[in-house]
Amino acid sequence: MDIVYLKNKKIKDNEHIGKNECMNFSNVVFDDCTERGVEFKNCVFDCSTFKNVTMPDVSFEKSIIKHVIFKSSNLEKSNFNYATLENVTFEGSYEDGDYVFEDLFEASFENAKLRNVFFESVDLSKVNFAGSIFENVSFRNCRGEYNSGAEFKGSFLFAKTQLKNVVFDGVAMSKSNFESAVFENVSFLNCKIKEEYDNTSIANHTAINDVNFKNVSLKNVFFDGAMIRNADFSNSRLELVSFANETDLAKSNFKDAVLKNVIFVSSDLEGAVLTGVDISTCVFSLQSLSVQQLKQCVFSPKVESMMKIIEGFEQIESTNKLKRTISNHP
Image (cartoon, rainbow, N blue to C red):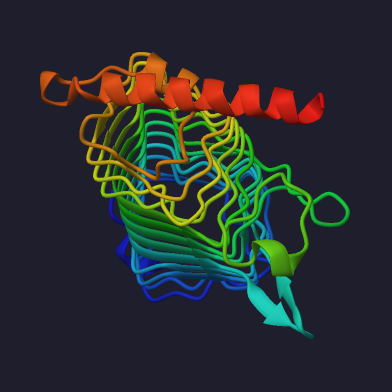
């Protein structure tokens, strides 16, 4: 049912909204409203605004939301499951020299469709994006749960999502789960995750430690200069992916992953697992891999000669070890 008279209406801050289904709220202004547990199921929002609202537990399930602004609001535990969001902005504010974060704590966007959606200065702690489809979505200066000092403990669930043309800029996303997600043209910039750090040492790096990329598909994704220790890329498919510019991949797991035209130049792969990985089309710095790691890899027939190089490395390593032993025992 389409309720025409609700269009172009200003909802008063003390007006009861309650439960609504199949209604059209286009051009309705909800600014400064306060109410818990509001329901908007299968509703339509076009050019509506939600500024400075306090609506915890609000539900937008299966609604169509276009050209809508959510600004400086409390939407914790909100429900956007199966909703369609297009040209939507979620943003906090900047007051007295500090960010006031939009609150989406424990919100759920499960199986939602997000296109041209912009998240800036938003608290996304424990947000669930499982099964969602992202296109042209940006996360800027967002965070997880803040806990004294510089440690962020928020987590994101992106399992089985599709992400295309997505930018994570300045996002806190420790222990995030991207299992079985599909990535295309995705960038992680200036993100801060889990590590204790000072702003000068990590300002130009991405840290996504302990993140699960298992069974994902990544294409045209750039992790240059990132800190990705202990990440799990096992059984994933990576094509045209770059880990260049001193990317820290220490102890990451690439077991049985499919790598095509992946760049590891100047990356740190200390302790990384490459068992069963064909690195024939990958580019490495000579010092990036140990002899043991090279032995874990597989090579196409065109580069079988690489095994001879490995044997050469072993001889050099053995000779150097002998030299060190002699020099230590005059």
